[in-house]
Length: 132
Image (tube, rainbow, N blue to C red; front, side, top):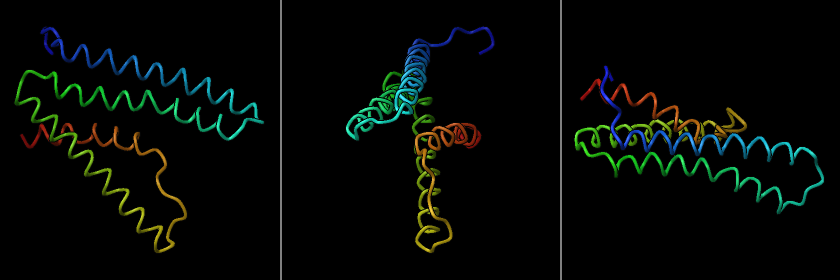
C-alpha cells in the first residue's frame, strides 16, 4: 500500500480472520487430540465436528462482513465479483467431480469445500482486478 495506512474496514477484517483462524487451529488441534484418544460416543464426535466448523463459518461471516463495511463502492463491486467467481469455480469443480462419481471414474470427491472456496477466492481476485 506504498506508505498509505490500511483502511479501518480492512484492519477489522484482518483482525476477525486472524481471530477465527487462530481459534480454528486451537480447536482443531485440541479436538483431534481428544478424539484420537478413542472410545467416544457418536454424539461427542458430532459435537467436536460442529465446534470445529464454527471458526470457519466465522471466516465466511468476516468475508461477507467486509462487503458491508467497505466504504468504496468500486472496491465492494470488485470483491462481490471475486466472491461470485470463487463460488462459480468451486461449484464447477464439485459438479464435474460429482459426475465423475456418477460414471464410476472416481470413488469419492473433494472433502474440504471451504478450503477449495478459499483457494478459489484467492485465484479469482487477480482475475477480477485484471478484467476491471
